[in-house]
Image 1 (cartoon, rainbow, N blue to C red):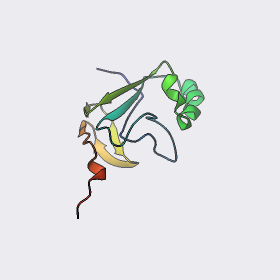
Image 2 (cartoon, rainbow, N blue to C red):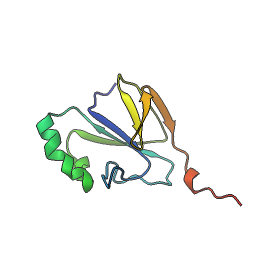
Image 3 (cartoon, one colour):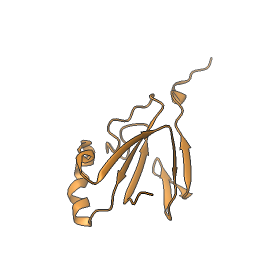
Image 4 (cartoon, rainbow, N blue to C red):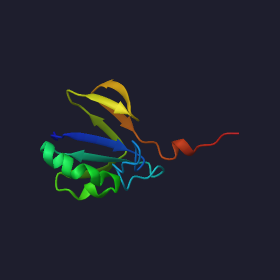
Length: 105
């Protein structure tokens, strides 16, 4: 079990107006990048938050980055996808390599 203030799962490097939450994520590698922010004080969060626009927040000692093909997140919280509320946790997801790049004639 991991205690976290924020968990972000991305297959792209940025969202929300250019926040590089998962700065090394690749759209076509078949893996999610998972950014976990462990609990920090509100003051520390405000101090670190601006670094998300450059992706430098990943160097903070309370930020961990993982890569995985599948993920399941359980908590007493609500999940959002691309800024839209999708519902209460738990949630599971699987990254499918090149799924968004498939073309059919």
